[in-house]
Amino acid sequence: MFKNTCCFFGHRKIEDSKELRARLYKTLEKLITEENIDTFLFGSRSDFNRLCYDTVTVLKQKYPHIRRIYVRAEYRFIDDEYKKYLLSFYEDTYYSDRAVSAGKYVYIERNREMIDKSRICVVYYSPDYLPPHGKSGTAIAFAYASKKGRKLLNFYAAQ
Image (cartoon, rainbow, N blue to C red):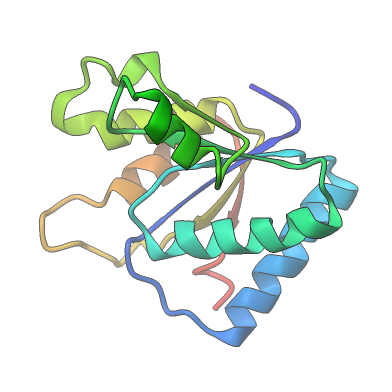
């Protein structure tokens, strides 16, 4: 676990609002200034992840020392051109070794990787949400983070 690291995960679709954006900004700024969080791990494929990325990017203008890291769940090997593209948005990117043989569970393993490397998880999780394809990856990640004793900041619950 990295004591100055925070990760994000949440449902693909969220109820976006000015209030949610304001609470998220205030919370993330507090994590930077009071909890000494300087590294943020991002996955992909959710509205909440995009909102968190946008918020951290705005905060980076005020706190240039913070780092955004994209933990890939696809493309284990990338060429220099794609890496350069990703690094135009993030300070670093990597593919987790634990995702190599995960098959269709690659997103679950990627999320576990981010949780294992984080002290705090900023999430958007509703226990009542069930996606059309079955079990919620966010529910799996939330249960894993709880079991690992991570500090969970749930922005769904704050609605």
